[in-house]
Length: 173
Image (cartoon, rainbow, N blue to C red; front, top):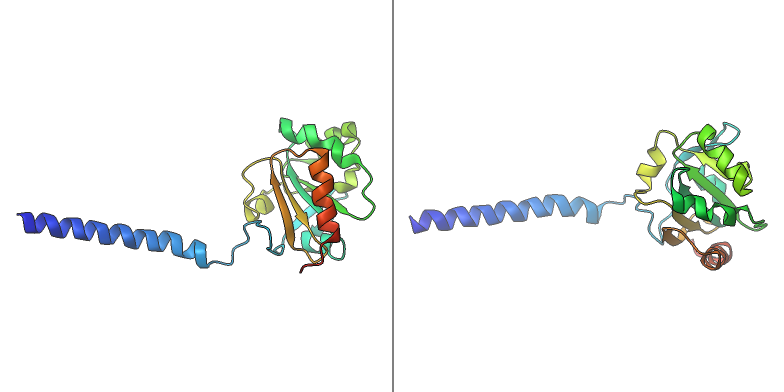
């Protein structure tokens, strides 16, 4: 009886180890984009405020900047929107929401944000591809399309300026 019990425990342990290998191995060996510092932007598209399909890679090509994921219903997102109304002559500012133009545009206008900085992902495909689970989330992208900094949650104006400086001055690729 003790011998059968021992074999059951051994089989259960082997099954658990196999399950861990199956679960962990794809995540560690995958080249999936996780929006981590050092990763290049994947091929992904959003809709501009004029209704045009826009490649996020192309948007940052040759000029660094920030990619902010936000939503009109998010209080922290609403709080930091006026900071994006500043004039950043050497940076691309892209604010991506998974909401509609009708929901986002009035808030952008009230915050003084140029609606040309707004992009829409109403299907949620880009939010999923970038693994966005907390709003706001901001990625700072250099001119080669590489993530150089990431902020989850609201930013202070000082942090925005600092990370934007890094993104627009970064030479890495």
